[in-house]
Image 1 (cartoon, rainbow, N blue to C red):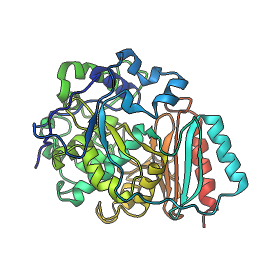
Image 2 (image 1 turned 90 degrees about the vertical axis):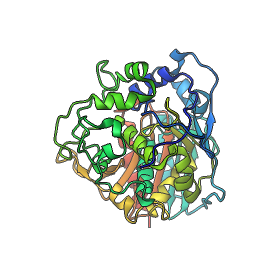
Image 3 (image 1 turned 45 degrees about the horizontal axis):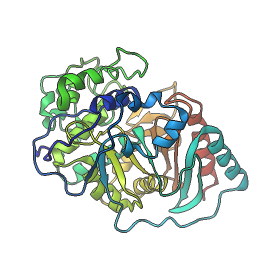
Length: 406
């Protein structure tokens, strides 16, 4: 097994970002230490101006601040930037959606503080509209949509042979978890959040595991994520209970980086950005050791959100194992009779009717309809981080879009 091999990047405002990612997106700014080596050649480290730590807590930003800063997170947090694809994928215009549906989509943009919606069918744009002053060339942060990118890079690492099997144990790739509740947990169980390890994702409980992230960063620095996850108790047998844990997506990021020996952003350049034909540069926040945050915080254009959706619908261009997205977007976990048709795959949410998608707080998403060849991508600054009415509205709108397809 290869260990990650790059120098720890200088990292501004580390403690503030820890609090931000823990309370906001359920993500950490921490990961295990890497062995030192030369810096990554394609992932350029972007360092923002020094900021007051109190001004880096996203949940306390005003609506206006979020609308401005979500499009320019590189001005607030350190991260890796990788360049656009050498041959960006064209997005030709297709037949427009019905006038009534277009009107409803435009109303949703205006009424929900959405920054943009793009509808693709069979590779052609049927609807594209922007709000909040966003332009086609502007990036917008993803929050937990990044989880589905990290899942895709996990598939790429399997395809490339860096990870021998999804049924390997997590400790094979993250030895620092030896002797913890992650003993015997497989990569597959980590990908489906069914490790059986106890975790509290509450963003409002000051005693939740998420809220404790900052204290682990203060005490353990670059080793914070392993230190915190290693201390968690087991509450169920692996594979028997699903609990949403962004900490585990960060572990997937660590696992992939340890296996491939480079940051996620650099691997994404070869395995997503180039084959998917991204037209803009990708920015992905870094943690204290200089790796990328697996569960959160990459920024791309709305068009590239849609290109990622097409990349998944088309099977990943040979970058992942055959059938990877069919498995990743299938309900590996069924939420049961209380939520019929809903479940969770490999870091993708699954919906009724063989539909799946990526979701992030404050209104980012990529919803895919494989049988229709439809991608419904959107970015925004919704009224609440999670639990607001907008998500159901957008799922209903995407269903209407799919109903008009073909």
